Image (tube, rainbow, N blue to C red; front, side):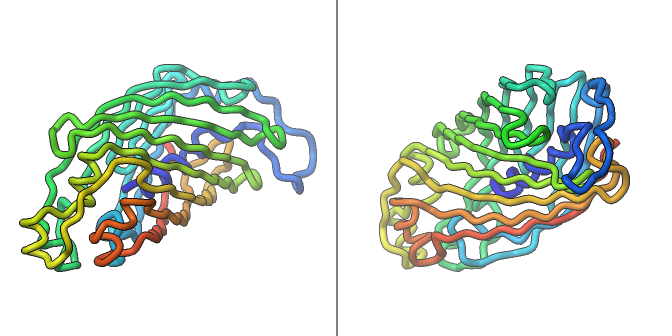
Length: 287
């Protein structure tokens, strides 16, 4: 679900887009910005579909319905990103030159908890859902290349509390957001994940019993940098504009690469593929 997380995070540009944003072709001076839109409470609900792998490292793909929500309450950002829930403890104003942000994160990991097309991986058995709790901290620099863009760096750290994989996950990310016009916004992001040995063994390892059932060779998972992902998302406001969006459409494309020992795992190297692709699209409405 990481690509869905990225789509939701990128689409949040609708809630944070500068009120005075104008494209290079917009004539006339920018409207006066009194900051009222940042004090306004908003909720955005998005529905759509995602074409994504059956499991991380799979070469089988399926179309899956997705939904998420995000918004601002008293200047505090909140939302769901795929199966994650986050809340910012700091009330930020995107008009500031530099924003510091932190808060709690909760994630429900469902990888390999449902039906899988590949019989070999399915024979390894389903993995129960994992509940991961932790927090994030981030810094955003506004007005990087022009008056209305932003560049953010963020690190989230979570720990499984259900003993499913009993591991810590460290996920740094960088994202760049810019309006292309009063109705169009672009987000580019790059993120990676570092996981512990038990995570690697749970999702990428094959023990002796699993080898007999599946025909895949025995493989001991090792912790380290699991993957990196690059995502591009385009949001188009259909009614209203970036200053006060209502109905919007979004389209996202993502490419990720499994790394090192994770790419060499039989569930990837034999039954799947280290190259992973995701496409998302749908509609969002801001209240």
